[in-house]
Image 1 (spheres, rainbow, N blue to C red):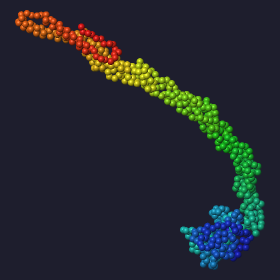
Image 2: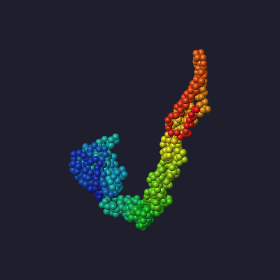
Image 3: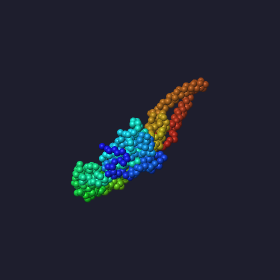
Length: 591
């Protein structure tokens, strides 16, 4: 229940207590923004202890801005106090208090809140005016009595849009307060007249201002009469704070929380709430973490956050092994010599590299053209690119070479890439050049060119294609490019593979003689008839016939034809020729 006292002296009992709001910090929601000087309207005027001049010009009242839906004045008591009552004195102005005074309607419907935070709704509604109107509200002062406690006291009024208010209420909300007093005892542990009586309970900090009943225990105590110490690992204000990591959790001081028997492992300080500094752990933080730990657990020293590079294990006491190194031992060693372990931190190979690799970590293959231990051996020049380890030519050989190391030239009449190409007609089937296939010692008879793949040109044959084919071939100089033999036989009157032999008597001569004797016979018959005719004519004239003259003429004719044959034979059998390497021509003279 609250007590209401109409101004004009208020009530004598209220003076038994102190004004807790006097000169305390004060704030208002909507400060006045009009032409009146700010020092005449500011919030601090409500807690200055002055309320004789109740007009806006007196400089003793709060005056808020016009046209606002809400008005709030907050007083900060700076700590929690026992509050007995709240006294409000309203602005009067120059007119008598009553329905005709404009400030009367602004006063209607106000509320008082008490809270331990700056949010009024976090606390309690101490008082709400809802019974009066401008006619029944006969004084601009209120004394609202109700026992409570808190740090922040709020005066609040509202005129919200859309909400219906009684007709006497002002259109907008205002503060317009000349003084707001918060009455109670300022010294903890006292109550009664002039706050001079100690609270009856030993561990009570604030008790009821009238009856002395404890409602606020000292830190570390609890119970109806604050007779119990905090328990269950709690201490302090209302036993709401938890003890730190005390050696015995129930043995922290119930008032200030200090650990009476020291701390558990991993913690330090009077309250045992501080973990061991980085690098230390255990009881009294006296043990040092393994240096290879990133940061060990403050209680047991285990390396919960991992190890520095090159180490492993719960306490990071083991070096990386099994060909691993680095952070979390997650990196694989390179090609260290003999598959040995690399340096556990940086991965360098302490005893060098396996053949075919180089660098501190032996992770780099030998450069192109080198192989083996320390990459000191040079690949065969005939290799396209040799294996970095053993020097074998895994990617093949350059043209003209073969073998695992490309150390063998192409042979068996082969040459070129992979020795896949066959040599041409090199002299006496000799090996051609292993790279380009050229015949180093020339070509077999009948062939020419660097690789001896081309036959002799028309009309030539033999070694270096220097020999000319016979003109007595049936088609002049059409002979075989190797042997020189005429491809289609010989011209008439010639014989032999190369057509350099004149036909013998049994062949050409017999045929010629047959034709000769046939013609001779015919001539003889004709001549005989002619002679007979002449003889008969002469006989007729001379009476005699000369036989011997006719015989002589026949012999001369035969000699003439024989000579003619010999001449023809000579013409057919002789001409200028190139050098011959076949059998010499055989010539027969007609006899």
